[in-house]
Length: 342
Ligand code: ZN
Figure 1 (cartoon, rainbow, N blue to C red):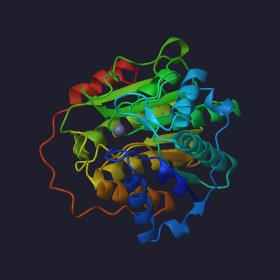
Figure 2: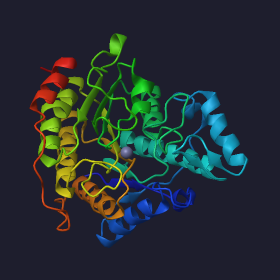
Figure 3: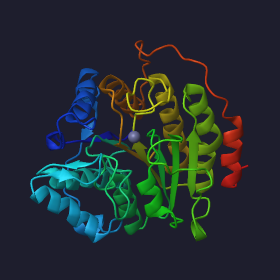
C-alpha cells in the first residue's frame, strides 16, 4: 500500500482575525488529534510550496489576486462582511493553494496513494472574480485546473461542506472535464446550489447539487451518497477525486443546521474512498474547507485519515443521539432526474 500524504504548515495559523469563526484553533485541533491518535507519524509529510500566479490565474481573474494582495499590503481589511485579510493572509493563501497542488502532484506521481491537505484559509466560495465566505483563493479549483493542465482528462470534486461551493461551481460550470458534486443545506448561505443548476453546454450533467433540508443527518447523507454521488462518480469515471472537506454539516457545528454525526461523516468518506479504489486506483486528495466546532473537526479529520490509512473509523461517544430526519426521497429523485441519473 502506498503511503498516505499529509500536507500542512505552521504558517497557516497566522491567518487570523480576533473573534472570527474561521480561526487558527480549527487547524490546531486537527493536527493535535492526528498526533494524539498516532496517525500523523504514519503519514508521509509533504512540503508546502507557493502556488504560482500562472496556477492561480487559471481559475481567478487578475483583479481578485490583486485585491487580496493590496488589502494585505495595506495592513489588512475586509473583502466582504465575512471575509478578512490580515497583513500576511495573501502569502498564507498562496501557500494553501500551493499545498493542495502539491498534494495533487504527489498523488498523480504515485509518491502517495491519497493525501489530506490541512490548510487555511478555505477556498470553495471564491469565484473567478470574488473572494467571499471566508475564502480568498479557491484551493481545490486551483488543484483541479492544475490536473487538467497536466493532461488529466476527468477530475471529480466531491464537496461535503455544509455550504454550497458556489465558487467551484462557477469556475467549472461549462467545463466537461470536471465533475462537481455538492451536498449542502438549503436554503442557506450562499444561496446557490439548486438541483436545477447542472452545468451548461458540453458540461451539462457535470454539476450536481443535492440541496438538503435542515435536520438532514446520517440517513439522508447515506442515501444522498449512495443514490447520487456514487452513481455520478461511476458514470463520470474520474482519474482522480478531490474532496472539498468541510465538516460543518456535523450536528455539533455552531453555524449550520444539519445533523451529521462523526460516524455519518465517516460513512460517506468511506463510500467515496472505496469508490476511488474501484475507479481511479484510490487517488483522492481531501482539502480542509469549513467546520467550526473544533471537537467535531478533530474527530472527523482523524477518521478521514484513519480510513485513508486502512483503519476503521471511530465513532465519537460524545455525539448527541440521532433525531428524526426529514424524508428526502423525493428530493433525491428530482436530483437524479435533473442530471440524467434516473
Ligand atoms: Zn462551510
